Amino acid sequence: MEKSLDSDLYPWLRQHYKNLRHVQQGGRLPHALLFVGPPGIGKYELGCHLALSVLVSHSSGTSESRALELFTAGTHPDYTELRPLEGKTLISVEQVRDLIARLSLTAQLSTYKVALISPAEVMNAAAANALLKTLEEPAGDAIIILISHHIGLLPATVRSRCQRTVLGLPSREVALDWLRQDLAGDAERYLELANGSPVTARELYDCGMAARQDEVLKDLALLYQGRLSVYSVAQRWKDLELNLCIVWLRQLVGALIRYLMNSDSTSTIQSNFLKNLKISSGTIDLPGLYRYLDYLNQASLELTANLNRELFMEQILSRWQALASMSKTTGP
Picture 1: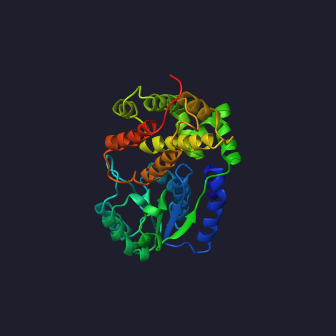
Picture 2 (picture 1 turned 90 degrees about the horizontal axis):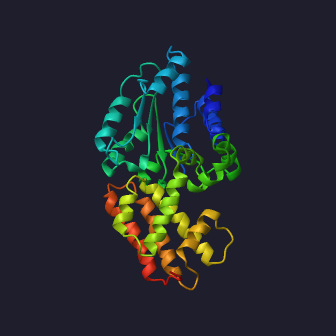
Picture 3 (picture 1 turned 135 degrees about the horizontal axis):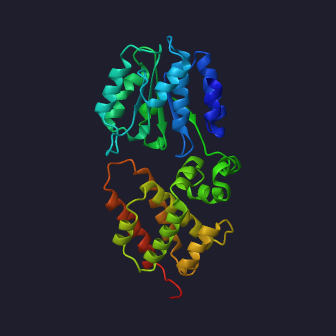
């Protein structure tokens, strides 16, 4: 079972999994773990592999194949996942209380119960507080795995009760080797679109997002030039995830700053975008660009809040458009 699990896991996570398995086999696995790192690197998959490993290792008679079948179908009675309910952005205190009640029940197919919370930072304040005692002293034999993309949004009281595993982006070479198995010549483009996150890159490829980004870049150039309105662009972007929009904007603003500082690190895609803007270091408000980048960085941390998506997007685009009023475009 371990061999099949390991072979199914992303290559950059296999050593982390082996380390966790070693701790588990030694009977030293803590009852509260926190996997931290950027989105799109497989933290959730690592959590699932560890959860299944715990359930199988402590099986009370169920075969490994049967445990895997139930786990894959989402019907293993000793495993619970906690996520925002459909149409919601936060995990409620009622959901956490239900989880606590489930963990207090006697395990059925394993001697252990496992829960996975993803992403943990979207628990509202009451939910996080309700979980504290269980993180410290879970009922019976239980393992709770928390997944976090933005650890700074997790209360310190939650963080302090978990053993933390920090997972970073894989190296560019490792990510491209993995992506090229399916993406071939598109691997570099999509890894750039995903800001270095290979799992996200694969998902963007499946959706044909390279063409979608080309449209986004065109919209931003036209918005900057005053040829499109904030409202019309926001409407054109209704189908895009907010997080993805902000990632792309942060990439482009960072590229614009490097371009204006005479750096050679700008990609071909971003260079074409900058050329279409018809700007130079003498016609752009560089301090304004830095302020906008700071704003985008803060906005990326507010995505887990219960926000009005349309209004939030219009605010982001309005600030981008405002850069033009502080600058002087050159050419027609």
